[in-house]
Image (cartoon, rainbow, N blue to C red; front, side, top):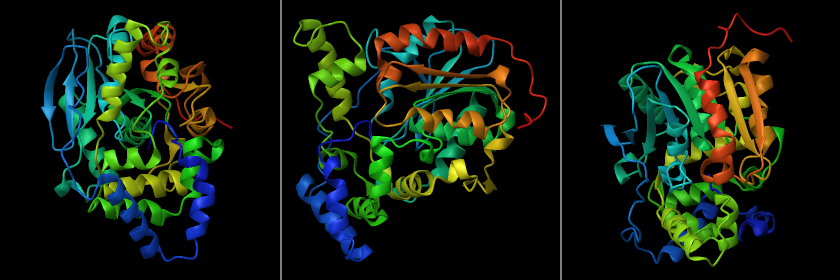
Length: 377
């Protein structure tokens, strides 16, 4: 659930086995103490102001968990709902800066009815919310915009969008996933390798340290991702501006402001993601239960467009492309694209926004043949 593996991650394989003889409660207590030490033992106010996107819009609906942002410029056609990740950082990753905004790229390519799910930081009374609660609230957003959408899911918002399309197939017309983990076993990434090598009790320790929540700023400090090198920012933004130039300094400041503002997550939700999606790979295995219904991806027939990055350190390309064999979308309704990009570059990289997303919008606007049943394999 982090966009980069920090400097602690190379030591994880050596550090966690040293705790293997300890009980789960002992490990959780140890992790809680480590995180409290990083935070100074106090839940101080946020050091940074919540980043605002650059594209003008309105808040069409606000729930405890999410704001529905409306970037609509027209009234006809099926609306597109952009589902951003509910992870460590906020939704401004999709609307970061001029020239680095997916929202702006989608509108410029002809998306007239565009909405975005902007997930809100969890308060203390939200600590027991789980995946089902967020899936149900996503359903509220879809109903609010008319009950039928083209879903665009980014990273952790991707698997949630996939769950939604599988659980409510009549409400999703087309599905676009970018940098989204689906089948963790298909190919190891830096994130999935670390997650699978780490005892669940460690993640439980994060939750214990936050009194039932995962406190974003403490996790960022723990994994060493609270600061980002200029060269990494340049790579993700895919900017031609040289490091050290005034224009790059402006972009770097915007990026660092976005990176410094973190979301707090409900402990139940966080542990469900770790255990069910990553450690047990339930979505790909067909064992994931969403709102009382077991999700079988082989029942998915809707058109899908899958976009992965060849240098994505968070979601390995095959973790996403495995969906092409797990679902039963007909070949003529399925696209898989591998872009020259790291993880964040898929959403804010200048080259990917200019060269790949306009084609995705054209694909969304195309009339595809209706599904006629599962492909025979």
